[in-house]
Picture 1 (cartoon, rainbow, N blue to C red):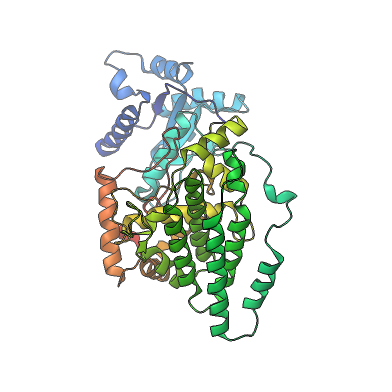
Picture 2: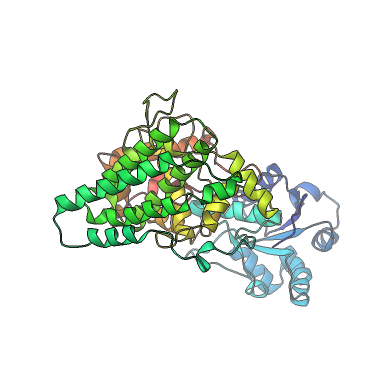
Length: 474
C-alpha cells in the first residue's frame, strides 16, 4: 500500500518533436494541472538564456518533485540509447538514479507514442520498469486515471483490508433437512406440473415465514443474521428454479410479494427485512448471470413490480423497488469492527456470503450489472440509478468478472445476448441507447457513482467498451 501524496509534483521529460507532438505534451501537462498535480515543464519554466543542463539536473534531482514522467516515443528511445541531445543528458542523470536505487518509484515511463508497426520503443535503461500506456486512444482515459492515482500514491489494485474470517469456515448448514430433500425432489423424474406446484408451495411457505418473523434481538446485527437461514432456504430454491419450467417467474413473484408484505409492516424490523430482500435480489442476478440464464435475467430485470413502494399502494416500479439503504445496519457493522467501511451492510453480506451460490466477485458483479443495466432499461425510469453498494468487493478493474463480461461486448454474439437481456428488440436500438448514455457521461450530464470517501468509482459497461466498438467481432 502506497502512502497518500496530498500535493504531487512532477517533472515531464520528453523529446522535442513536431509542433503536434509538443502540443500533445502540453495538453497532458495541462490535464495534470487541472487534476491538482503541480507540473514542471520546460515549455513553461525554461526561459531564453537559462542553463538547460542545470534546469534538467535540478528538475530530475529535486526532492520536492514526487515523480518524473518519462514520455517515451521512438525519437526519445533513440536519443536515450545514443545519449544524444537533451534527452541524452537527462538519460545520464536518470539512469544513474534508476540503476543505483533498487526500489525506485520516482521515475515512471509513459508510453506516449508507438512506432509505425505499433510497437513500444523503450530505452534500454527503462526496459525493466513497468509503464503506463497513453499511446492508444481507446484506453487513454483508463490509463490516464491509473497514472493520476499513482501520482497521488493510490494503488490502482488496492490491497483490501484483512476482514473477519468468513462464517462458512466452521459453519454447519442451517438449511433444514426438509428443504434439502425438497431440492433433490426438483431434480427427480416427476412431472413438470408436479414440480411447479411443489415449487410454488415452498416459496409461499417461505414468504409467510419471513413476513411473520418478529424481532427477538435488540442488537441489530444479530437480528439481521437471525434471518440468514431463511435467506439460505430461498437460495436453495433459487438453485432449484432451473429444474422448474419458467421457475424464474416464480422467483420474481416471490420477491415482489415478499417486499409488498414487508412494506405493510410498521416496526424496526421492517428495514432489516427489506435489506434481506435487497441482498437476495443481488444473489438472483449474480446466479442467473453465472448460469447464463438469459431468459430469467430478461424477465426479472424488465418486469414491472407492485411492492407498495409509495404510501403502501401497489405503485408500479422497476427492480429499483428491491433497493434498500440501511444506515442503522451500516453503522452497527462499522462500530462492531472498529472500522470505517464504505458500507457496513455490504461488508456484512460479504462476510456471510453463501458460496454455494456464488463467490465474492460474482456477487459484486451481479450488483454492478444491476447498476449498468439501470442506465439502459426503459422500465427503470427513476431519477437515480441502482447504486452497487458492493462494488469495492469486485475483482480488479481489468481482470475482474464484470470487466471481463463488459469487454466481451466487442463480440456480436455477446452483444446480442446483452441487448436481449435488457429488453431491446434489436441490436441497433441497443447501440443507439448505449451511445446516448456514453455521450451523457462524456458531456458531464451523468456522473460516475462512488462512495464519497472512495477514489474508486463503480465501473460500468462504458468503462470497457465504447459504442463504436460494439459487436465489431464475430
